[in-house]
Length: 125
Image (cartoon, one colour):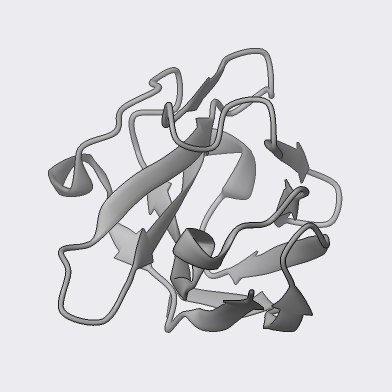
């Protein structure tokens, strides 16, 4: 059974930082690219960042470039999202996802095979 479990969300003031973690089980973690997506109330789920199986290829949404950093630890089956300079518009439920396209850097929701339940990030102004 595949499980992706996010943690690290919470309430933070604008300008602050948070680090999200996503622990994977039930998959060969190093054979999957890992992505982060987010969904704000009343809005569609949107791409945030993706990292290839080795960590050698990363891609970010323009809205988070320079502020967010995605990384992974294949020994721990965990992917991270370091978020800095947070803005109120970053408020959303953040989801991690796994894609069998291990070399990929896809921003498409349909490229991902497994999803976590999400963790809430709220940025106050």
